[in-house]
Image (cartoon, rainbow, N blue to C red):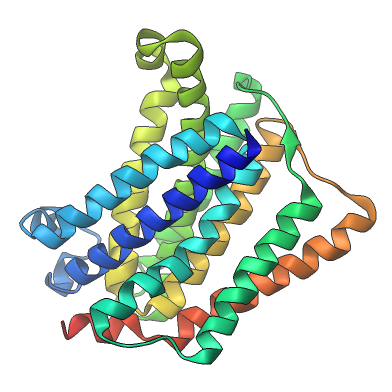
Length: 288
C-alpha cells in the first residue's frame, strides 16, 4: 500500500506540474490590473491553454486522493515537491531548450534528498479520520496563515515579495486541502458516496482547493517563479507533514534519525531553490 501511495503521489506531481506550466502560460496573457480579482479566473476561462491546465490539476487531485487513501499524509504530500523538476522537464520541450548539466544535478539532488528524508522518517501509523478537537486548531491555524499571507501580499503591487507571500498562502491552502481530502476520500472508500456528500470535510476541501487555485494564479502572475515556487513547494510539504502528525496522529522516526532526515531536507531545499532560479520560466513563457 505504501508503494501505491508513492506511485499515485508521483503521478499526481507530474499531472500537477503539467497543469502549472499551462496555467503559468495563461496567467501571463491577462491584464495585470485583474490580479487579486475573480476577474482573473473569468479571463482565463476564455483560454484553451488554461482549461488544459485545469485538466492537469483535476487529474492531480484524483491521483492525490488515491495516494491519501493508500498511505499517510506525511508520506504522500511531501512527494509533491517533485512537481518542480517535473514542471521544468515538461517546460523545456515547450521552450525548445535543454536543461543544463547543473540543472540535472539539482534534479538528482531533490530526488535523492527526498528519498533519504522519507526513507529515514518512515512516516506511518495514524488514523483514517480525526476528531473535531483536532480539526478546529488545524483549520484555524492554517487558515489564519493563509489570510495573513494574503493580507501582507496586498501591500505589494508586484514583484518577488508578493509572489512569495501568495505562494505561502497557496501552500497553506493546498496543505489544508490535502488534509481534508484524506478524510473525505476515506469516508467515500469506507461508507460510500452518500456519506461522502454528508461529510463537512468534502465541502471544506472543495473550498480550500478553489482558494489554493485562485492564490496560485495570482502568485504566478505577480512575480518570478523563482520566488513563488519554493514558497509553494516547500511550504506545502512542511505544512502537510505537520498536519499529518497533529491531525491524523501519524508517526515519523526521531532520535538519531533526525540527522539524516535534515540532510535530506537540506538537499531538497537546495535543489528547489536552484531549479527555481536557474530557469527563468516567467520571462520565457511570456514570449511564447
